Image 1 (cartoon, one colour):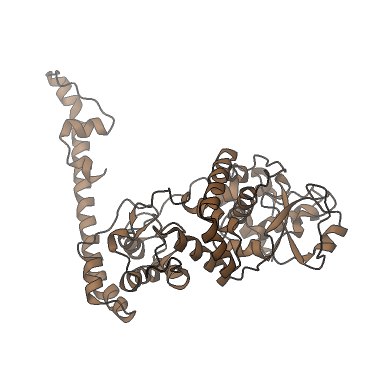
Image 2: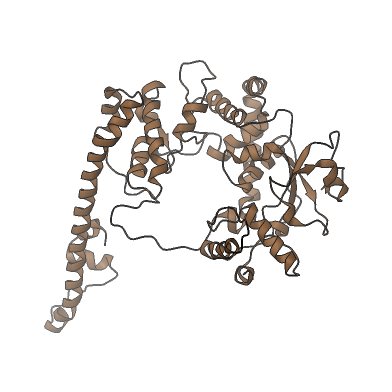
Length: 442
């Protein structure tokens, strides 16, 4: 029982626990019939007090950790005592954040996988959402056309890609970014399930306060500590954010020029190739194996074309440069559309390591420029748990099959492994799991 329940009067506590008390009843039998429930409520109340005391002990450890660990490390990173005093004064843990692992807490139970990237790709491409982002993206492109032109000239990234990322990450700045970044990062670094990865981000956030003239009150983040409209983690901000409007601040919270130029700089630093599109939707002949997917199996466009692959418009794939390398990308296997993508598709994945994310950005950018919807149909696949996928990956790995990370996620290496198993066992290749297939693959 939570501590706030323990502070309620006895009758209210029982009501909150799903029990009902008739305040008009005064019979002895009625009173004695309630005794077990009242005893149970009292025990739960004591448990709540103990929980509150446990939180107090964790908070005390948190303060010791700030003083003994965070302050010295931040000072070594160039953060002044004045900045630390302002950032850490009165700082407490945020117990409402998800993905926490407080000391002594039981390990969470495996839940059914519901993430669209891995169990239902069709849901990721909700048409109403795409249409809204497209309309708003075209308006923003026109509104900021001069700024976008200057950014594209400097960094070589198309305006439509920048606007698409801006829209996907923060709804063109309309999305709420409600969390105080320092408190969020400190909580995750102290007792998050992935605290080791968050600690450098906390130190980086303190460095931002020291050197970038961003007030503490304005440094807001997502629940996972991603900053501002581009949703940069603090370490990425330090190496990537730019002051494009020339006001002396790299303000990715309020300055649209800084937001867009910072996104462009990020992509450029990660290897964006100017003048090359992200990819194109294609029709994959039945005779071409879906297991040819992925960044490690690229072929010249002319070679893909010789295999019978054409764009969905029926046009030749190679165009003017048949020697350019393309990669087959099928995020739902044969249960969804197919694409031939360029290196720039994988540069988009450095922003968010998801095939569907990169595809969403590329497709939204096309639509902002006037393109239409994806032609291929998405089947309603899914209905399995992440633990089921992980068990299959473990079985395949034990046989020497490369499935990528054994993490329960249906990445391209897992899709390839599924397709190759299907081919070897005389089954039609789909390159995507279903509940029955996950049990069959041994």
